[in-house]
Image 1 (cartoon, rainbow, N blue to C red):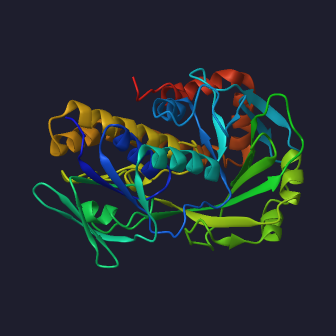
Image 2 (image 1 turned 90 degrees about the horizontal axis):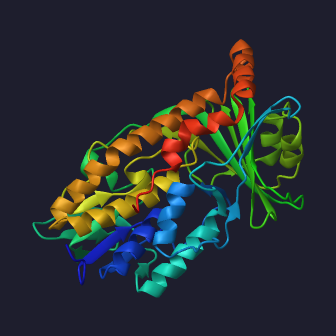
Length: 383
């Protein structure tokens, strides 16, 4: 199926939405991105793009062989929380290096590429409904404006306003886990920068460098039940963050001491969508398969979605068949990766004898532990 001249509406101007718009436009489609915010901005935070996600960014010509703005990773250090004692060194995936990006930097790369390709990006464009017609999707904005296109792609995040159109109203399950995020200026450069995962009872902290090691990204997760707001932009008290992780020693203690601004939100569990598409409207990224952050695969899964969506259009003879093929191909893998992330949520927070036993196993297994997840990183949607 040729996309030349076909109109697409992409709902959401995040990483998945911009990547989808770029990929469609590169193949001749006419794409309009509808973003409800007044600017394409992100709260200061990092994300990890492993080899499976980098393959798509390269195929879209967003990054080159040496990626712009990304900080290459040399693996992960696992630490015990008390004094920061090193438990194990995990090498980077055999499939290829992971890159650490400031979310705003990756968004800017995609935004720039999309505009260059001719994508129309509309801000302050909040979508309230999407209607299915025999040959079109009709997108209705809160202003009352109606836009018609051959297909609409909803990439509007884990709390998607469009997902209920296909799946009805759902009640997400609170995981009793709270995530804190922060970035701080950093000057302690390393020859081989790595992420650090510091694990304690019912808590863990992940840190990794950004922007040529001039910033340190901090993600701290704790189990609690007195906060149940999901918003990324909710302000947190840095002193409260430090108090809740006061018994964490070693490098992470020094990092938390430098936090001057933080955000926090409650983690909710939503299942992989039962219905991804209806022949004219399709879900992509977190809207289809929201995942907990414990495999760092949210952005990568969205990028994989983009390429399989494009391939499905190229291989099928119409929009309806293409969207059905996309859903059939993507759901099994999304379910597997989401399940792996859920399992890590438990593994990171062990306490008592189970924690000590797990540490002994990690020291014994060492670098071989990284092989457990090679099925995630070695997947290449572009081939």
